[in-house]
Image (cartoon, rainbow over the protein chains, first blue to last red):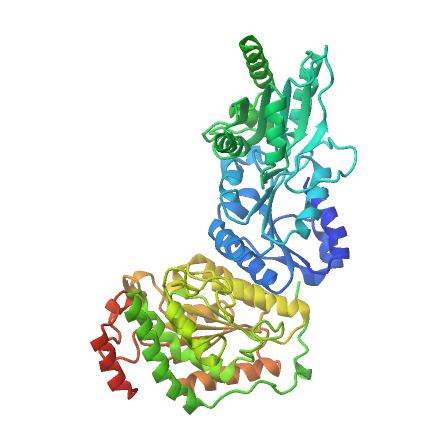
Amino acid sequence: MRNAFADELGKIAEENDKVVMLSADIGNKLFDKFKEKFPDRFYNTGVAEQNTIGVASGLSMCGYKPIAYTITPFITNRCLEHIRDDLCYQEQPAIVVGVGAGLSYGELGPTHHSCEDIAILRSLPTMTVLCPGDPMEVRALLREAVKRNTPVYMRMGKKGEKNIHPEVPKLEIGKAYVMSKAKDIDGRLNDVCLLSVGNMLQLSDEIHKELEAKGISTTFVSFHTIKPLDSEFLLDAFQRYKVVVSLEEHSLIGGLGSAISEWLVDNNVENKLIRVGTDDRFMHEAGHQEYARQKLGINKEVIIKRIIERLDASQSKN
Amino acid sequence: MSPAVNNFSTYSASRYIHGNVNDTIEILKQLRVQIMNMSSATGAAHLGSALSCVDMIASLYYNILDIDPKNPNDPDRDRFILSKGHAATALYSVLAFKGFFDKSILSEYSQDGGRLPEHPGPKCVPGIEAATGSLGHGLCIGAGIALAAKISKKNYLTYVIISDGECNEGSTWEAALFAPAKKLDNLIVMVDYNKWQATGRSNEVLGLHPMIDKWKSFGWNVYEIDGNNVNQIVDTLSKIKSSIRTNQANGKPSIIVCHTVKGKGASFMEDDNNWHYRAPTPAEIDLVKKELGVE
């Protein structure tokens, strides 16, 4: 995803001379082309994330569109107060981009993991929270983010993510994107709705295909915007489907699953939700992303089993 | 990557009218009473902090800043950020006296529904460039504004007042590293070095001394003055302004270490850290008025 980000950034910067890239000493060679083409619009702000955000705020106050970028926990937890006070409170439309969200940097260990960022950033007033699902969505959402006149946080994967979209989709911030509508299976249309967040898109696609192969009609959605929450979509989904599943490489505390839970309570909607996310603990052994997912509760077979069990339970209830 | 070179050699004489120093000294007496009245009326804290830096703020707005109160959003204006936002009463008072907004609004300070919160809110009134309150933010924002000027090749200058206590914050030193690295010679900082912070002497809480050496070693042009002396403030700022305009700042940002007295202006408040928290009684304000020779 980071390559798509850098490439799309270059294209956007050609069209928009207000885009300024602030990298907190990250992205070896990633921004070489950008630096060459736009030398006065790229700044290495050093391993100094609080100042990076403050500088972004100042630039934004003067009409520039700054993008502050580094590894997710560093551009979020480390400088949270600066995001809150300098961007959100003052409604400065800068874009904060976290690369390697969730467990993308698995092997580097928990200091480089980020399973709390959605929880924290969505609690900030005026903040928009975006989670592109594949490199195509990175391109689409970055363009939309640049148009936004309030602060934006975008958490993306790192590298090697498969493109699930065949081409760059037309995405709208705040509107869930239906990747694939449930097929009519024996006259049943609406068994399960999968709401996939960010870099879970590939795994969610696999789950979707396996469910359909088992005769479970499944709608597969990229729920790329956590804030603002697509309430209209959720209202329809919770009426239409027997089971709704949120899937995120993020703690079960505070991510999309929690946001939907809050929404269920506030809107008095029947709970048909299964939440998939990471356990409330750190990993204490070495391991790459896939291993980390398994250790922290994101396991395809278990997820599918949970969905089938819940579906059976809901069917026997009826 | 170095920012674009400034075109300072084509900078024409300022179209802004600046006052004379004696007038500033005179108006400061009224400003001090105004600030004390605001503290007394509300019981709000931070009076001592506002009094230590009001000379600097007044000097900026009356004698130095190229800014028009009637045109506070002019993109070419000089910017001032009060990073020590808890001294807001000093900034609000100066802005009101200079005509950025009506003086009557000063009575809304710290009132329910009022436009003047105890720390400046985002554009809460015309003239407020940045919302501050948590220490260690204003200098970073100021650096961003100065950088914007470089990118857009504009000549405006960015001034920031920070407190000595604020030099405890890591983000202050991040900005201190950043500004010289990006050659932000259009950034001018003043440290309100009143030697107190919330709970103790600022040289004892954390090792701020030697302040001058620290900033010099970070690559700043460093000056040192009596920060309650308007003549020194204006002279030094004028010198810095001129050196920037004539490309003699060596690509370095400037910082003035301003030795000040917390609670300056009232003999019984000076250097007494109780006035970080205490608000004066009407009788105490009358005393001050007598001392200053204000009606």
